[in-house]
Length: 212
Ligand code: SIN
Ligand code: FE2
Image 1 (cartoon, protein in one colour):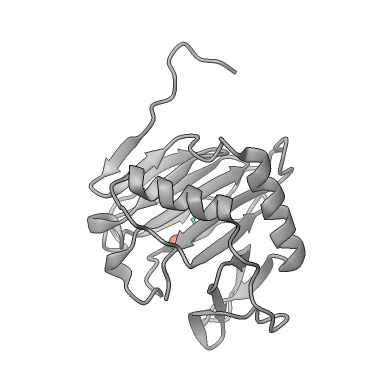
Image 2: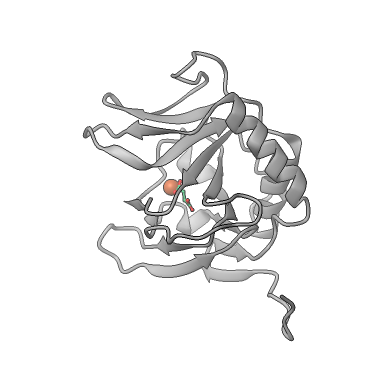
């Protein structure tokens, strides 16, 4: 669908939090095929929280380190706990996309070594949380690429009870948050049903971090 007004190139949501609409679309086919290859190698699976709850979102990882959760806690590790094999390597096209998006948002030199792949099917949601399992939280931003079905991202404040703003994210949108926004709470509202022409009944989020 074309629009009279082109989408803006970037929207500053708060100091350090920048939405780059459609920034992931330039190599859409390459990204989607790299994603499907990684998920074939390390399938997304529902993990258990330290409190014993099954997450509704299924996750996998690529890169040197991957985020995992089980009864003993949240952590990053180099091996997939299901297979004891290293996570799939981070494809160059994804590394570059995350590096360039961070630079556009004001964070030069971002070198992600971890990428959490979150697969949402209709009904899945992610409750408000902070990303703080990385070794040097303050020094590196987070870069998040959304693919597939549209979702409502909730961007809260630095304490859990702060009001959150709703940010609609669609296929190809990239969100960067770092600096004073790095520890903002965030989550994803229950995914509505739908069908995406490339990803079917799924939303996939790729969350790039410098973890180690
Ligand atoms: C996350 O917080 O790790 C994922 C966020 C998202 O799915 O947009
Ligand atoms: Fe997160």
